[in-house]
Length: 612
Image 1: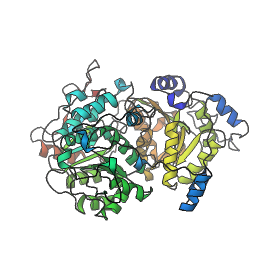
Image 2: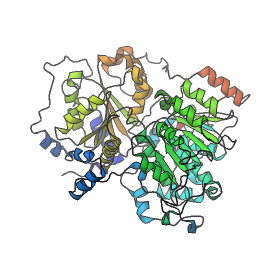
Image 3: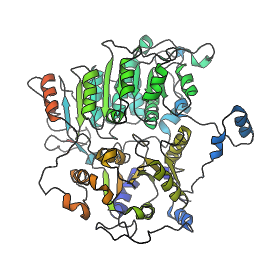
Image 4: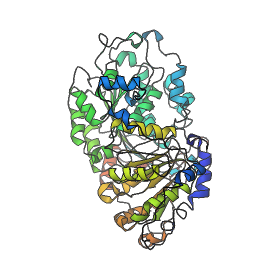
């Protein structure tokens, strides 16, 4: 059997991209690989099931593991006990109940190391690591506000709490800041409200968690609510009301779990206790964790509103920081009513010491209105690159494939590259199931995730994808939003998103699942006449990053030398007025006098672009 997929690192990925990326399209079946519009083959091309599994093993794919649906038919206590006795029942490992550092009042200022937990949090093979391809990235940093923030290149120069610095540098192995972190970390440490706009996969989560938690670490004993000593915890007598100091709101369950994982790492050996609540999972487990005490709460809006209606369980009157992550997606998904309830309702802390932060890949009108309503007038806004853009570490390929040939093209495409983690995006829940069945029946280790799956099925699917037992994930765009998984080599748009459902912005979110924090990746998209509404924006995205424009899209490409005009819903007039108000006589400015330059790189960025 081949080596596990989890060993596929960025060096191998770079070799695969150079060797296979250029002909990934040409090897994807005779009906899918040409840049010219093909003649539709009748009948549609098929992939025989007979012998397919043997071919998959020969190519190096691990064997697929059948899903045991019997475990989901266990509903009552009696059924669970019977299934356990027969060895048919496995207690689900919910994201909300994941192990975290539990504080003891006898620890003093810093807790001792927990070797087993340290292994799980920092040394696990699936923990995301920074890649070695930052040098090809260029960013133009644009900031607005009453002061210009001096960027921090090294975490050691940021003035972080000693425990946070140790967690970040020694344990997380973050050796330098990403562009968004370089500006947001000092802005938060200086006490500003912040809006951060940066490409997906640029390190936004750490950009806000690191400075917020660092500021609270020295004040936790003074600010945090009383809570029990968990080493002798009795849930009948010791449970307390959760009164968090930090609230992070995000639109997707899987994203909430990821932010929680990062918070678990950054809170290690401190008194700060993170919790996560999200829809779909059993409320009882999440409630039990809150009752042990909570300082950092990560939540999806629906479940948060439910728990806010239980004042004996949760109070927001101690909140010092509210973070709205993926703000553009939050508003797109019609969470506006819930957001208003969260930000205005209940016993939310309305004192001047309550800071607000918003983070997003784009900054549309609705998000700007939200910022004006809740953030201080002198908030700092940092934008890395063009709002809604992608970056050069993603090799983008567009292939003409008729709908009837997509299954064959997908199968051939997967075999045109080394086995590695791949995410396949489709536009409907039914299509996700059909594509997953197609691949699984041909011996490929696939799984799927969409909103009709139960929460346990979704978490099990992600666990299998991360571990490498099912390295091919078929997903709808909504459920995979914000996914941050190590070594995702290839993103495949089996269906391109229509302009009615996110359009080019959804495309950018999808391909951003690969090539994260300095790694490299490939994004291949199947295109045909159904996607003509996306064509103009798609071509401009390709040209912006000097990617190949296929022959069948050349006729709509802007002429050489003609500026690329992006309709990214950025109101330049409003931006200029806000900049003039916030910084009289200066307006908005491009950061730096020669561009953002990390300490260990050489050379000079051109024309104010920040090179990485």
